[in-house]
Length: 289
Image 1 (cartoon, one colour):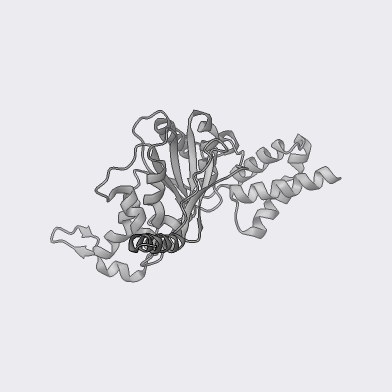
Image 2 (cartoon, rainbow, N blue to C red):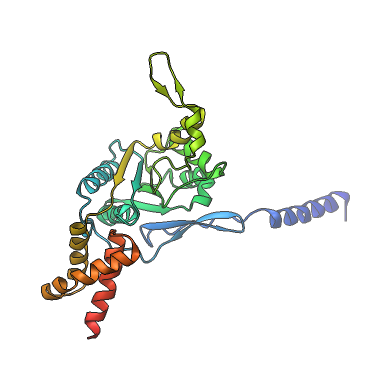
């Protein structure tokens, strides 16, 4: 064996060993298998996993959020039709339909090319990779971050700020970010933050750097949509809606009112989620009897 052959053999052996150390290529999703995806990690490598069973909730299932529903639906329609549209932050009371509204919009516009990618808060540092992966696709993608909030110093906070409006690269026109949160400013607020406010000579109150930093992420969402706790009658209307879809009669729905109120009292909430949970319990019992 010549010296050249020895050198080539050693080089090939070295390359084989190096290939074993490199991360595997991300599997390309089959875009025809579904219209919703989750960003997952395997061996430190991210990939899109198809969601085979997507919630079938429709916009008509969401009651007493008429204004919020109209805002999100209109923004999503603009996006799907290739018109200017905004990233959206949905905030407010728990269980009032924030994430359900996004899922309902997906079902409404999926046949027009809308797709959804759910990303956990811990994976927000991969947003740049996700956008690069889908930037050349013909579909329109909503990157969905549910129940979003950050503690001081979390890496995902900076990554999301850059993805929204902070990079030298323009945001891809086929991607929007929709996020839900119980906090409007996404970072915890402390009493000590008030000390950073400054008074000017004319009496105006100006936030200090700490407060400015905490509100800067929220301000990068072009559309803010707020949700509020339901009144008792609203809650009962939602219960009646779900019981109707589950096959209960008008008489059964009327009889359920007292049980529905006691159910909400036990949970300390008259939210849409609690109404749906009660309806499932009640309709199940009525079906058995």
